[in-house]
Image (tube, rainbow, N blue to C red):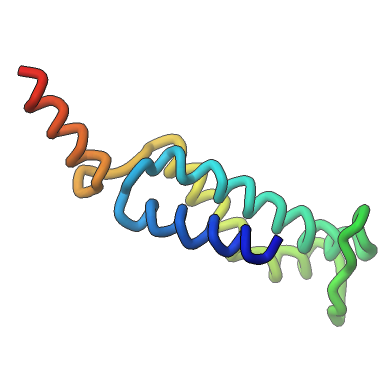
Length: 106
């Protein structure tokens, strides 16, 4: 799964950087980060493995330890939800394509 996840992150991340199909590119990344949180952070919260996912060796387990480990993951999750709802900005490839379609429709 490593090469597949790496390809999804690289391709969809590049799409987000330039603003091309922003909302569509956010969906696989949302799935990716959700699985990452489920497989690595929820076991830290519970203090034991979850289903097939093993527990990382940490000095402490529980809510505060999970929040410490997951701060970047939750930031990425909320940023992707924002991009899914709002979409790209005026300087994106999506906006350039939309302006081009409006100009050719006249």
